[in-house]
Amino acid sequence: MKEINIGPYQYIADDNWATGPDNFTWGETASVATDSQDNVYVYSRTDRPLMIFDSEGNYLRTWGKEIVNDAHGIYIDERDTLYLVDREDQVALKVANNGEVLLQMGIRGQPSDTGYTSENKTVLRASGPFHHPTDIAVSKSSGGFYISDGYRNARIHKFDSLGNLEFSWGNPGNGPGEFNLPHSVWEHKDKIYVADRQNHRLQIFNLKGQVVDIWNDFLQPCKIYIDSNDIIYVAELQSRISLVALDGTIIGRLGGPNQEGKEPGKFLSPHGIWVDTTGSIYVTEVLQGKRIQKLTHKSS
Image (cartoon, rainbow, N blue to C red):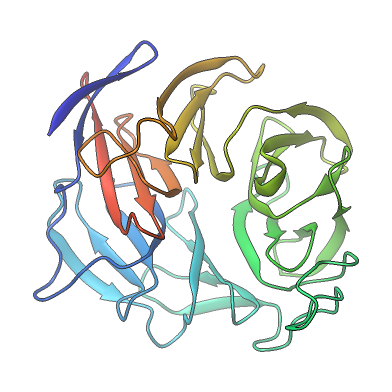
């Protein structure tokens, strides 16, 4: 454990926070979310795709192997309903807390046509849902969902609460409203925030999908979380996390390419980020990172 500061906030970093089941290793830990009781749901590319821990790191249970092939994005709403993105299977799921699938968006194993093939690994055109989707977030304004469709597409899709597609936006490129791997999406106060990963920026849209702002100076942003205090938390693949105000001002940063490492308070490849009710931050890592780290808020 190690005491660290991110801007004005103080934390205790602990990468040994959780104790998994016997003979378990983390593997690529894609994403994380907490429920209303601050139980922690770790979404990983292992034979235990969804593992649940209490806030002290005690292992509770696991499920998901029967419904998830390639864990990527996760979201938990205020009623503790889960939303899971299965990247390679081309689907997003609404799932009850006991693992019952309530809704599926997309058709398993049927990617949309974006011109991306094994011979031509380039998104030539935007298309419908899905071609390797990345993340999902609930729309608090409408009760529907936003899904970022990024690895082999360049779109954000808006669905209603029943899973019907309402509209989509985005095209491949680096201009305003264009995407190069839209990797995460979040709605907050009638704005939609998108992590445009390979363009190293966040794009902000209104509820109609029109650009209202663009923030540069990020390092492959992978995941966006926004808390009730209007703080934006960004996991960046190049060894860094950032805390940002709603006007785009950087509140604080931790890590970066010249500060990478595996010790507590440092990162190799952050991919997921979430904040619990106490203000504690959970960060998951893929690639060479392969772990989850808890940054416990010192006032909690």
